[in-house]
Length: 492
Ligand code: GLN
Image (cartoon, rainbow, N blue to C red):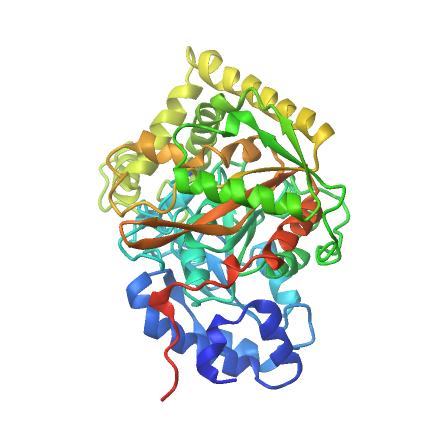
């Protein structure tokens, strides 16, 4: 193996080399650093890197641990002690995390090395990473297009072989959608499966951390490390964590897969539809049985999501007041001026829009009409899934109705941007789990753009969606395709 090939490795294959002592954690980090230096000028997936600290950690790491010596990129909304944690917001531009989030503690305990923070939509609000207050990230498959969002930096880094794996977060699709349009695997775990302690809150009843990887096996490996109960997080579920790799390799005979007629919408790109239809046939050929189900309240999901997510965000973001941390306006004339100008200067347009919308739907007089009603419809959406899961083991759909769109194409119209979440946000509202994995390509204007297949599973049934996703992945070649931009030049 040449060192130049190494960045293209997935985590499982990298571990083989590490455990055989064919390569050291230090060499892995140095090779990755070179790769990032070579390529990130084109992609801009990272907001910060600290290879100096990472290299020190590499010296003492035990490579026989579950993720021993594996560098992992971290979305810049998750606290890594001593590292910047900006949430891609100017308001936190100079903030450094004081402690490790629980997921980081767990990654370290498993031997992984967090070395860099990835770009995102500001406070995870967006579907294209264009709302970043720091910079644009480009899709490695076509640098004139978005990598999806809000975990766009994590998805682009993994797709461009600038990371072996990454952590992202989801509130309404922010792991699955960028994974889909960047051609990688992304998992939204069950609400409460993974601790959010040390993760900056956007909408606390929806937020969840999850892996972004090159393969389903790698996602299962990261899940093994980060899932589980955390007494410091009140919504963390106290349930045993299975070995997520144990389900991989089982065949699909007897597995019931649901297709919901409400997910066959007009706005879906015909190439996306064709790829997902073909994937369904393929899953059938592997032994899965297809069952038609109905999720009648799907059409309300986006509205409900954007009421609840903005309401919760308006409360969560109140803490950015320039008093304890982050940006502070200069020479305020009084306290109100201090708050007003700090937030005016620190927050970007989308974050302000969400705070205003959220404050509005919570205000007296509108609370019942919007917030309370949205809560009720959320319950109906949850029941839709509960009923469907009586008949099926997992639901199949596209992850995103469209492949990666052009930078700037949707920024003028927030509603258009919100529609990117149509297939993903229902799972967050229902608290269930989901995965996106590559299932084909769309040819658009000469570009070859990845398409994502979504599988949704019932709460705490991650093992099942991993099993199905793995069976599909291992009998197809989509996950092996790499963007040509990042073809690793052969050593002379
Ligand atoms: N695109 C959605 C939003 O803008 C989802 C974001 C997320 O999952 N963090 O809110």
